[in-house]
Length: 456
Image (cartoon, rainbow, N blue to C red; front, side):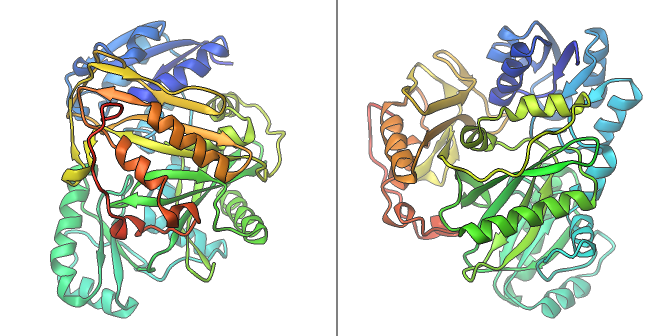
């Protein structure tokens, strides 16, 4: 087992990893930018190292600084969390080069499935259904005529995606030929800004699909199982906002089939560690491979709540060579997660940095809050706007929703605006209550902002 883990991340996920490591008796090292000097993960870690100024490229994405921090603190492992360098094969290989264990998949797995085109081609070889799309990516050397011809061959509507995409970035839907050029340029520029790359590809667009991801887990000895699914269909600009497990859309037979397909995909590449296989499911319940994420997900708590497993602990165990003893899991509980962002819902979800003056967390049985904020904490504009996750769990979906409603009413954050009022309205929406939603649900959802002294 590892003696000391450096956590190459910030915010709530850094705290999440830190807590599990401490419970396992493992020493922890926090890293932080100058903007995060007063963050809780810095206070609670056994050691903390400043790795640069606020810009992510000078701090949390700075591989030499992170490796140096691990070396000077004698950390024997690095946990990357999600985002930043969690899916970066270069970072993983540099950890190996310096004798530091990367708690995540091997570099070749990241290369194989981190590139969306490579992942799709690999899954086709495994006999898994994929959406029609381009077989290779387009870069600066590609002519617009090539792009146009590929779009015509696939047939409109289509969706443009960044090869390096994630978090809903570098994606544009295109309904007809007239919108192609403008959408292509916007997606490409967003990809460059977010990932430093302009490589793009094209897929057939499915109208109003469900976004279903299967949690998988695999050891170093070839054993792989799944931990059921999460429904991540409620999204804004391809960014998830509400997730639940299990999905109200899946039948028991479809759940079993999708779980087995996810395991088959992971077995085909001999996957190790914790990850997800993600699918789009159409209205007729046909499902298609979308992507595979070789890391812990933001929404992992709802899987933990319905299974009783600590997925961070499982990651650490698997990275240290533990054999997997579990088997495929089918849920008996229900769990929902709402992502609380420092944003103004009535102003197109504009980011809302600022100082939190007062706050109060909800509590009670079946209520979990994953966050790094506190009264006096200053939310900066340098990083993602998510400041908390609220997770409720009960025996039935109805009970879970009622618990979420009550918890959102008790969640008080003052000093900045947040998406709490927005989530309250989702929890009252008739279509959501019936489980009848899809990835374009928010396009027709009308948010009526109201002032509230209890939750901003």
